[in-house]
Length: 218
Image 1: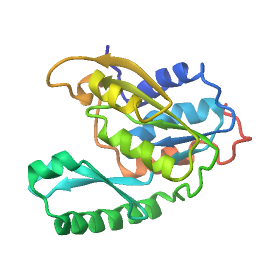
Image 2 (image 1 turned 180 degrees about the horizontal axis):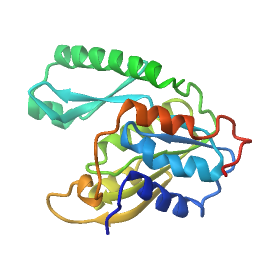
Image 3 (image 1 turned 180 degrees about the vertical axis):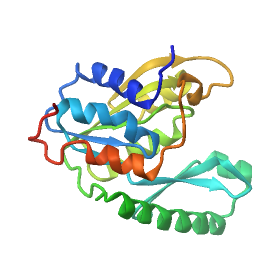
């Protein structure tokens, strides 16, 4: 099974989420691709779309590998086993995190986003475009919990079964339209169109959804 693009995947994910009570929930997306996937749910259920304010920490000599995530406030979620393998020092991690935190803070300003500061007693639905290892989503879940989220529902169009199992230990409900158990699994392989998500696409997606929970989608 594959999806034409993130929007189509998001529409199918919204169909599945229709079985979940979306009253009084907070809908958050993992930047960047998760924003486009979450947009149909925000429009269908008439809820605002927010972002999990986090950015990946790349290995300096292998940019496609991340050793963790940093939030806009500087909180770190680190993959300690991987850090040990690549032999990054605490000082190196600190400098990487500071740089990425500043970039994230500027991105949030450019997108016109005010990150959530208090999720106390809230049920949070976190959406991403797919789960490869699960580290990204676990970091997103832990970020939401650190802000007080009482219940966390994770939703993604596709996930590897190991990632799904990993994330399930950290959230209350896990929703995946496609779960795979194959070698060399890549999220991009389940999308016919999987381009980089631009800043303008993010701003457009955020403008297209309600700004108040009382608003309803057309």
